[in-house]
Picture (cartoon, rainbow, N blue to C red):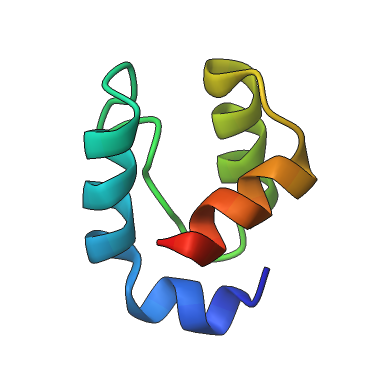
Length: 61
């Protein structure tokens, strides 16, 4: 994932992820500087997806 691109549009991306996966909360999608791996870990746990699967999902959004 290209974090510079993702960070620039994160609010929009997070909103679309919440629409696609109703079980995600605002806390699950909280992106803090330097904590990208933590975000990916939360999404992996909540959605049961691998990093590769998450990259595909986010890149399609």
